[in-house]
Image 1 (cartoon, rainbow, N blue to C red):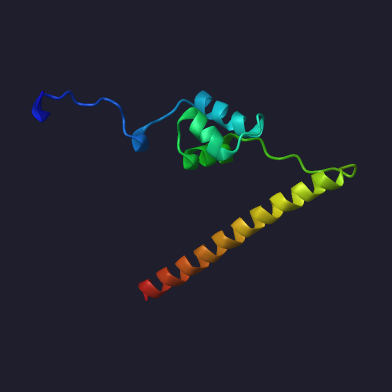
Image 2 (image 1 turned 45 degrees about the vertical axis):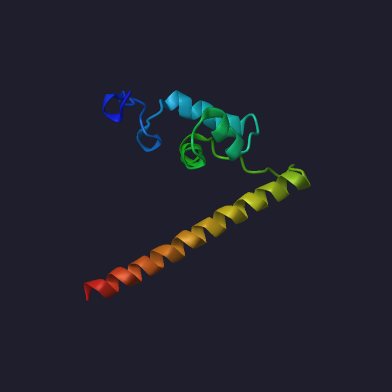
Length: 108
C-alpha cells in the first residue's frame, strides 16, 4: 500500500484531546485519595502531567487547615505546603513585575 492509499489516522493529537469532567475528577482522585504521585497517575490514565496538574488545581478540594489539636507531623506538612505556595506566589509576583516594567517601557 503506498502513502497516498494509506488510511488517514482519526486519532486526535494529544494537544487537541478533550476529556469529560468526570474523567478529570477521577484522575485527580488518584492523587488526592489514592496517594498516587502525579507522574504515576498521569501514566495510569494516559495523560500528560501538566494536564493532571491543571485538573488538580481546578477540582481538588482545598486542604483542611490543621487545628489546635494537630500532630507535629501534620503541622510540618502544612508548613511545607504553605511554603511551597508562598514560593509559587512570589515567583508569579516577580514575573508580573518584570512584565509590567517591560510593557511600561514599550508604551513610552
